[in-house]
Image 1: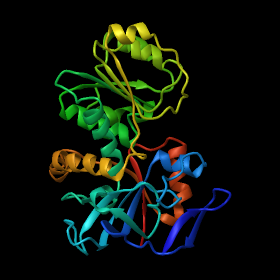
Image 2: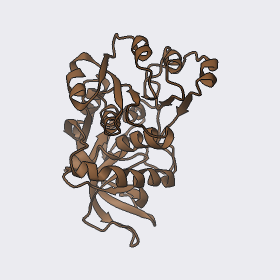
Image 3: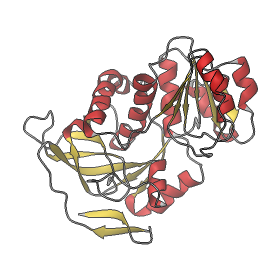
Length: 318
């Protein structure tokens, strides 16, 4: 098979590699589409390697057709599936533990399905399993509202009855508001502090961090939960610990990629039961910003690097 590997200089290289060999308990999938995630950009830059036992090239989520499956799994050859990977999705075939494979929801294309496992499991894991979920009337803050995770988190929070505050570039604000966000701030210049003073968040999902994050944390409601999944604006801040214990605040660090297959299988199982019917009914949607053939991977990555996207960028395989 062919895969979009990384050479010794971290440059993309479409080359022939050995076909993956399915181990017991794994599903072999012919890849139709692979979504691009910011973690792929970090891996391309040499700072976010795949976990051991996964291919050392990019790709965290795919959709495709089952070629082989364990007899005791719910899948059979020919089934359309999507899957969460530890790496290696930019290839014509992948092997995945059966617990990390999901059926493609009804009414979803392969390109749409490829965007579901990583983004939606990240949202479900952190909002529900890590932070305890949202209640009607809660104030929910999510950074980068136009990103794949941002758009998913906004939809999920609104389904829970929460009010949503988010950040985005001004040219993306109208789409985000139409999706249900109540307050959309200019990510380039607006100060979050007066907004939080008037609307203290109950929960935050943050991929940005930065120097002011400690001040934002102190403005949360009593019992507030702030989940950190990345620090794109930097990892240094000052936190008033007295506010943490007086207000019983929770600062939660979370990452999906390093979790065990068993942990990921549990997350995906919960997500499928709760969210898949909503995708089939189109009550939840995934927005495709752009679809590119795998050979145009540099163009696809450039869209994310320039922060042009509203939603997901997807790579396709013939």
